[in-house]
Image 1 (cartoon, rainbow, N blue to C red):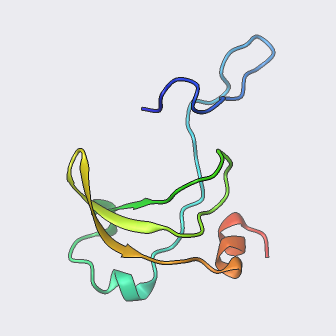
Image 2 (cartoon, helix red, strand yellow):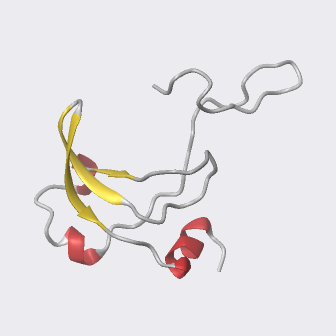
Length: 92
């Protein structure tokens, strides 16, 4: 859950929230990293730092495995090129 006021959800003319889900394009994990994973990709999380709440792809994703609800083990990091970021957003 995000703290109240973290993201301004779009509202309709009556003041009701149009959508309650925040989505963002997720980068593809490089094959060099996928080869080293022991389990299916659904057992891992991709996280990154954002500068503002916009649906833009990350520049520096991190692949983590949750050890406990509060502790994540960093397994890999990589940087996306401008071309990879353009492909993720659907603009070439």
